[in-house]
Image 1: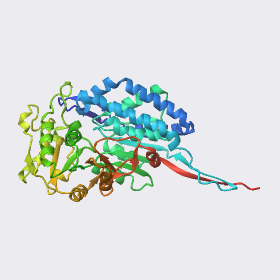
Image 2 (image 1 turned 90 degrees about the vertical axis):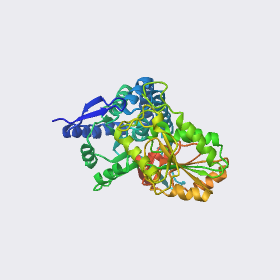
Image 3 (image 1 turned 60 degrees about the vertical axis):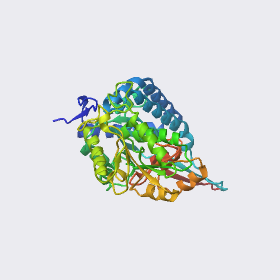
Image 4 (image 1 turned 180 degrees about the vertical axis):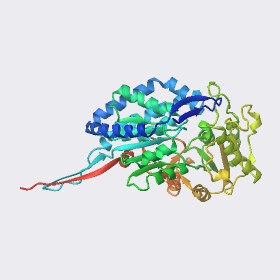
Length: 463
């Protein structure tokens, strides 16, 4: 019997999309097509690949409004915000396209008489991409575009919550004239994905998701000498220094904590505030949280939609309740939001004070619209608390002193260090994490490195 993928919309709990999962025969055929297509694709010039990928971006951008509504139905983001993801997707894709020739160019050491020497970046072969639902276009583009530009073929397994995103990519590539088999979406079960990763045809795995999912990837490829890029969870901190622009910090950090209902791997989940500005900051953050409109994400006035599933919201509610029982103080009354109800995906934003690192809400990834705020007396205290985490994806500081920001950032264990902003991926910079936030790198020129194999040419002239 064919297994069925069912995407349950968090808006009303109904099945929004159904798709059959690929069986062993379909997976085997896809792998064969990928290997055959790879010979054609890698023989094309970078310029030819750039042109096809640029056209694909054009086709996706043209359907921006329709895609935004699909996103709202699939994962619950307010429609007024959903289109912004396509803007971000386009920015990243076009940047990677523009830098590809230089990033993939031969590396030439200093001239040595009688020798021609260079290092060439060759494609790995088949890259298997596993993409999540929370930012389904923004996360997928990081690996897909770089892998294809480098001459690899790609098979994409998207989250069961956002299957239409994979199909959008496939349609755009087909319209753009990409050779058949170079990019293929497959709807797979967890077992099916694991089996594909174990296949000898797969040369690299690019995974974005949970720490548990990252361990499953490692287990699946453990007997094989292939690489994996793992972008995993986060418990990202922010530090509001004594010299910060408080109004700016409040605005940025409210957005960093609550946008997308807090469902961002690099969203802000814990804030440390210098005692000199603590009271003013907390008062402003509470007002900002209370200004969110929770409700039907299809309505233009809604600024906070449902979380992806009721179970996810209940997990965060459990963290909050446990913290309150241990002494934390909630600053937002969930009852003031008519849409916020136990047992549903609709959860009100929450600001907790009186928190400490013995509480799960300050140590365990929440992935929801809650943030804990702690008072600190010095930069040193903030650094210690920011580093007191199993995660290290991004971290941020609000200050007017750039030299201090750099000095503090050098001591914080993180993949990206922000000053006066947060929750943003600059495609010109390496996107990476430390500790349980994963390994590997995407975006920037550095992002091409894990998707290529260096090959040295050492040619001697004999006279």
